[in-house]
View 1: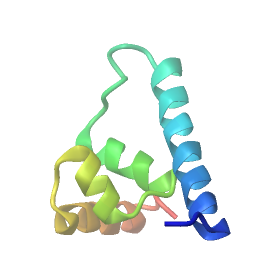
View 2: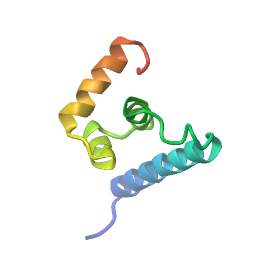
View 3: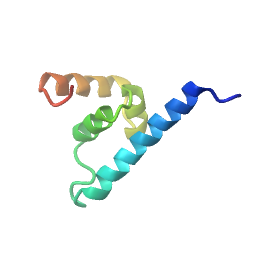
View 4: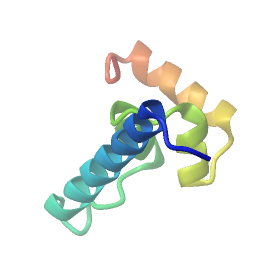
Length: 79
C-alpha cells in the first residue's frame, strides 16, 4: 500500500500525541503519574485522540469515554 501525504500526516499527528503523553508522564510526580480515569480521559482527549482511541488505550468502552467527555465539557474542563 503506497504511502500518501494524508497517511504521513496522520502518523505524525499520532507521534506528536505519544510524545506529549511521554512528556506529561516524565514531568509529573510519581504519585500523580497515573491520575484518575477521568483525568486520563481528559488528557488523552485534549491531546487529540478520538473517544474510540481513548477507550482502546484505557480499556474502556467508547460510550463510557463519550460520557466522561460530556461531563468534562459541562464542567468547563474540556473545550
